[in-house]
Image (tube, rainbow, N blue to C red; front, side):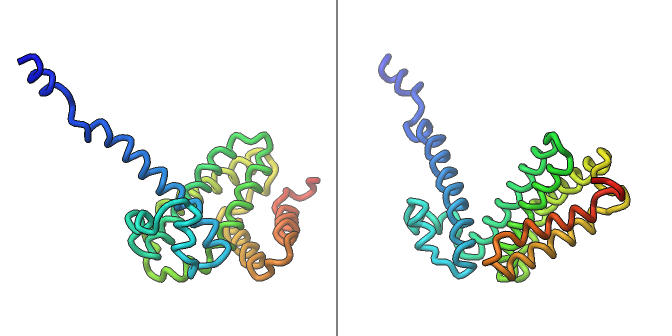
Length: 201
């Protein structure tokens, strides 16, 4: 009877193992997204999924379990990168210099846009799933701009929509001249010259 009672009280082995298996699956998914970002940046939307799985250290079956199609992987990678920009943008609100925090967010957005502009176009009409992550990234930028304006480091009359448009333009220019590594830095410096309050610097 004692043995039977102990057996009834003991959890089934699968219950104890489930959290570890879920953690392993999450690590695999995170690793796949990290590597997919690298490979899509290097090779574009037509990058080899076998190459992504191999570099992530998992089998192709594991990749397809998480992302059944190429578009699913592209969409998840785009969303993951945008969410990361939003997270880093929020952290930049604590930077010592308000304008430097804004500049750091701009660099993140320029790099993301210049890398993923063509990839996003390849997804066609399936971008609705990115709306939430995109809004978080944009909201962080808007807060950083407002902080810099309140600090007197950026002109008060400049709306975030104008800043966003200029960031997209710099990203497009950087994408068109991948061999010119200093182009983004130069264009960003010119942008900030125009954003500073008149008579500053």
